[in-house]
Length: 344
Image 1 (tube, rainbow, N blue to C red):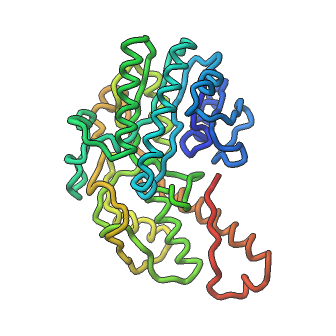
Image 2: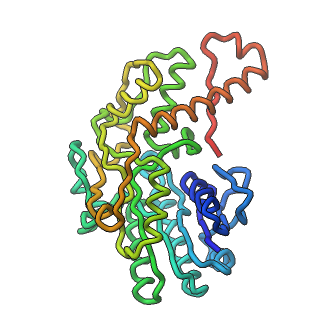
Image 3: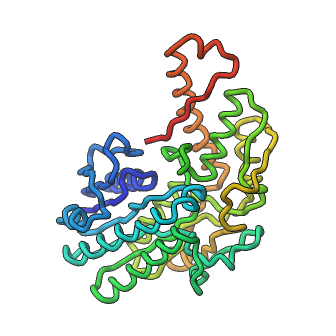
């Protein structure tokens, strides 16, 4: 039995579907009610449980042969900068899952880490420094969320050393794609920009707001590449953390350029320098993943954005259509309010 923790989240939902497609028996766990899961696979044993509690972790790992820990209270930069204590409390999930994995003699354990573990001093240039795995030390990670992830990595290392659990750690770099959050404060930059451009198209607005000056550099990893990376890492004998991220770096302005091109529009950009920004520049150095796994994420940003934009556009169109049916006054308004909802 494979246990996916955080299965009601964006990456977790895709991972459950992938494992089922491979013929695996899967138990899917999340704290949210099943009706709020981003994706729900009927073929899985779907369980609502609070994995911050030690007893819950012991219950769900019964008969588990491998664990995928993607359970985490997190979101985009706006969320993690304003909810540091909540992010730190995620250490309870990983700690209790590792303890339960030891007691149940689980053979393999995957921990979803983040590029937020990397030292801030190596990310102060908008040129988008390519970060290799050793750049996590000397430690100076993103406050709150980054420290929690780095601590989680160390927990995995020491449980492997002391108790023989084969732990695998993937450092994710800005994973995006359809069936993810695109509003509400937890969305990441690709989904947020897609939403803002679609809102402008629907409402006739000729501008969009951009956090910062648009020169911040990032790389964005399409969800299919992320799932492939997890699969390969779990099949490997690589005990050290590996980047699972695209090496295609772009500025936020270039990200907006791509979304505008997909949408067939061009908007005025209103910059918000006081908004949460994160580091100046971050990219993924994929030397180690190529060397160890003979693979690296390869889906181009334009290709992934086209699929993501199309899905968000359809979701927002459906929401607008549903609202329009509630009253003619909303259909007759030339610039109707756009109802936005997060994908569940």
